[in-house]
Length: 356
Image 1 (tube, rainbow, N blue to C red):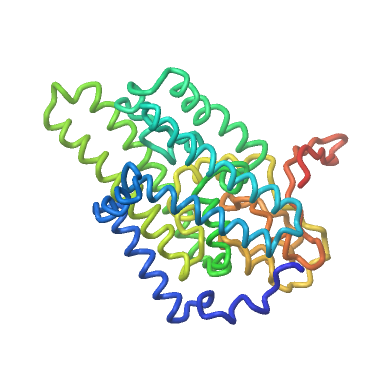
Image 2: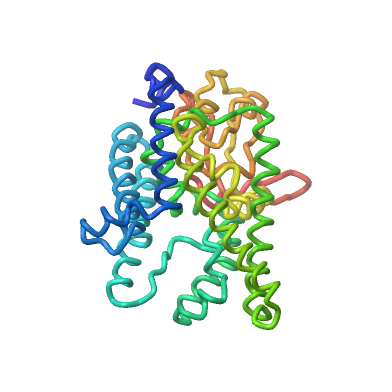
């Protein structure tokens, strides 16, 4: 019952045929309307919702719930996929939808507990910090600067990108049918390594500029105008166009992790920690039959087969630990592990900390 290659490319929607282009155009148009117009305010009011972003949250959460059900119908024979999918959908429903909505109804400023800096860059803006309760600010800072780096080192970026984050959650549920469309070329890999860290640098610089603007902007009008311009630019270009318009709009043509792979600043941070941390996909030596299932279904564009054939563990910063490569492998060659390596008498001793 594992997913195979037989029906992957036979459906027009999954193989960049005309219907895929139409869906891509529809998704791009929808996100342009959401981020840059108020067209959805009317429908939101008629549905007795507070605004377009509440309507968008409803649609987003519904897409994840329905997509998660279809995903489990196809891949639910894997315990890892069952637990991972139920977890990421539950986090979306509770922490990223229900809880912020309840806070808003009770008259408090909404807060999305599943998002952290630098992905949710505004959570480090002074204008936002000063309007939040101390415990929420503490939660945000400890999560962003302490807990997440530690978890990224020990467990890899999978703990967030595949188990918590709503962006990855949508990709792995509603977008699962398009995962095989990710570009596996070395050119895409080279571009990815430049683009994702460029956006991370932009996030750090923007955060610093916004903080300085809050501190000294009142006395320096020119710098104040520049600071607000940078803040607006980052929100419109990175927060809107890259994460939404392209990040979701290009699902039918470029796969589901365009944003996560090429532009997400959180993925860049966690990827660096993962590269030097304990998480890896281990390979059973001399077992790979080069079927290519693993590479085909890698949503991050990693040529997993090349690693398996070379008997090398996969330790790429891009890997989000979705586990699909191991799931579709017909021989059980691949395994997701987080483990330290200790040495005794010059020989490495592997200690298994997490074995999933």
